[in-house]
Image 1 (cartoon, rainbow, N blue to C red):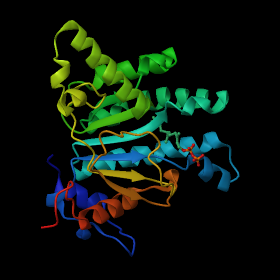
Image 2: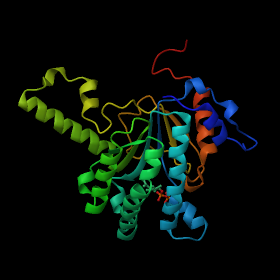
Image 3: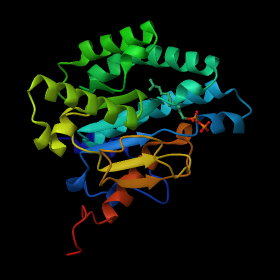
Image 4: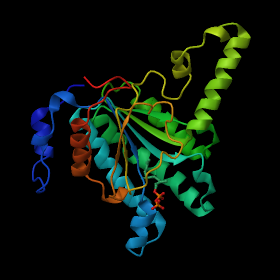
Length: 260
Ligand code: FPP
């Protein structure tokens, strides 16, 4: 995707000592970056605050991540906001997050329009509280004609549930005769995932130092580069994003092929 170099340089002025925009090769920006935003609870605890305050601070980081991704010219930014396992958290925290998602989405609609961002969701939205569900539908409708970066939120998402759903959809298509079960290809599976039509993530960033995939995009990250930073999500800034991209560009991606 195109980006405005002058705008990007202005966005990345006042660099810290260890990193600057000059370290990035602007001709090799990845198409899709995905984020596992982890560490809100620990951030809050470290400050003697309630966990919910960590999630609120996480929204500020997310806003910056969206702006950064647009400035860098990514095609897709996706984020893991709520997993199928997150329902096991306290009712209070789950309610808070659902409310926060709805509230944030409405509040940020002007930002999405200003930045020409199109929303998309991964996950079973129908199981969400009605207000959150309706808000997400509104976000989809209101941004559907935007032509810039796709910002995808994984909410009530789990990779195993996604793959199970794809299997069920394909079984149904086979039953109806629209697909030959003997000839199912990886592309047929891809078409039945929530991420259908999107490029796979080139880079998956996980904050807070945990070395796990947590049931996230397991099919799609087959060849993604993983970058794990100890920075807690509420402390993650445009500079941390830049550090991740520079580290990514230093790696050689072989997609299972031999070294050249
Ligand atoms: C992980 O930290 C974070 C979450 C499960 C929630 C993510 C939500 C946000 C960052 C707010 C984003 C808002 C929108 C609109 C998507 P954790 O609670 O697991 O932290 P811990 O591991 O330190 O307990």
